[in-house]
Amino acid sequence: MKEQTRLGVLNEVEGGRLRMGMAAEVVGLSMRQVRRLRAAYRKEGAAGLAHRNRGRRPHNALDAGIAQRVVALAKARYLGVNQQHLTELLDEGEEIHLSRSTVRRVLLRAGIGSPRKRRAPEHRSRRERKPREGIMLQVDGSPHDWLEGRGPHLCLVGAIDDATSHVPYALFREQEDSQGYLVMLRRIVETKGIPLSLYHDRHSIFVVSRKHVESIEEQLAGKRALTQFGRALEELGIGSIKADSAEAKGRIERLWRTFQDRLVSELRLAHATTLTEANEVLRRFLLRYNRRFVVPAAESERAYRPVDEGLDLDTVFCFKYRRTVGRDNVVRFGGHRIQVLPSHGRISYARAKVEVHEHMDGSIAVYYGDTCLATTVAPFEAPLLRARKSSRPPGNATPDLPASSPPTAPAKPRVHCTTAENKPAPDHPWRTPFKPQRRKRTF
Image (tube, rainbow, N blue to C red; front, side, top):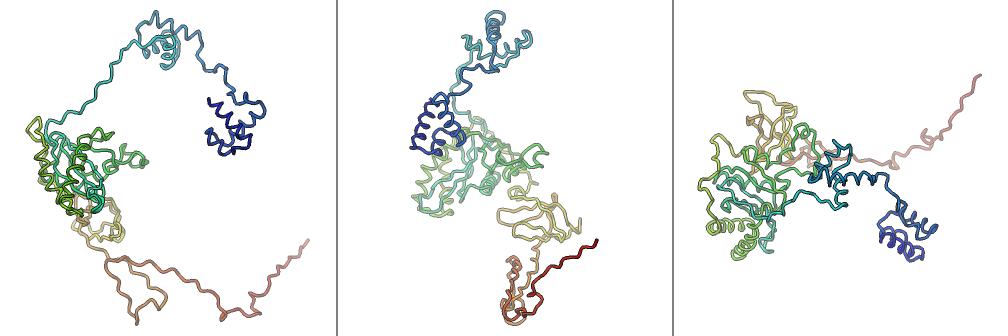
């Protein structure tokens, strides 16, 4: 069929009704291969399109005598032996070195199937719930037009308990981000306790994407780096379980279908149009939803762990970044310049490795190990004065810059062109034509 298709295309090309480029797209070959086929077609006709290996025996084909011997051994001496075991016995006792796939193909051609009877695939059913509340929470985000065009497009971030279908907390966000999950998890930890595990998908918020190339540090450590949310889970001792499909975390997927039916109607009845109004409606909706749909767990005891008294949640639910202190004891973080002040344990922190904590309220703290360093806002670098006088204010005063604005970039030097006032004279050496002088040869 493939050669007939090529023959028809080449006939169209020879008749001038089809160009070579279009012919290459039709047959799925390159221009070079189409030219080669056209040359063979002009020289040998339709027979030139046939593959040259047709009718030839492959050089790596199995010898017929060896195949007959394998079939005879399988029917007599090794009767009832499975294919993998037969391959090993032929290699060890008969010196017949074949792969398992080759032995299987030879036996199937002879009508000898595998003696092992495989069971039929099991009927798939929903996974059993966890026995206690707090053993596992399923978390996910649901981007949807929750306000039905009355406001911005929002994303609902929430969690559901696997044992009871209780929704401990959920909130609307402008988009699915790490900060939303951190806010949700902190609320759950403060009200319920620390769950034992979280079941989530492979979003880049939870795990580093497989497409990212491993860094040298990751290769030396033998594991991938943690995301900000993954780091918070590790500090709290919460297990991270990754789902390979949406069906695996079907409980929270069914929750979103229920919310997209009931909650959307609640938002419409409340005339919610903003993010704040949507979260207020959601708070009242969760109270009624949990009373209606929560089921009792198999065991009444909860698995949530209490928060240790010495654990500062502000140091867990934040974004952490590693930085190196400059020689002037200033830490650069985004558009911020943070001046590290001397402490009793150390006067200078120049070239020290520190950790910058960016809290949810926007405040920033610098940690050296477990110690929070005293910091203040560092002054910006002195701005460069512009060369032109017209850019300065009246008088000799320097213009005041706001404290929050970054220093201005140095002005690009202007290139002044030559005018008629400083035009060289006619007898100027620049106007004298250059005449190279030949050196006299000395013999």
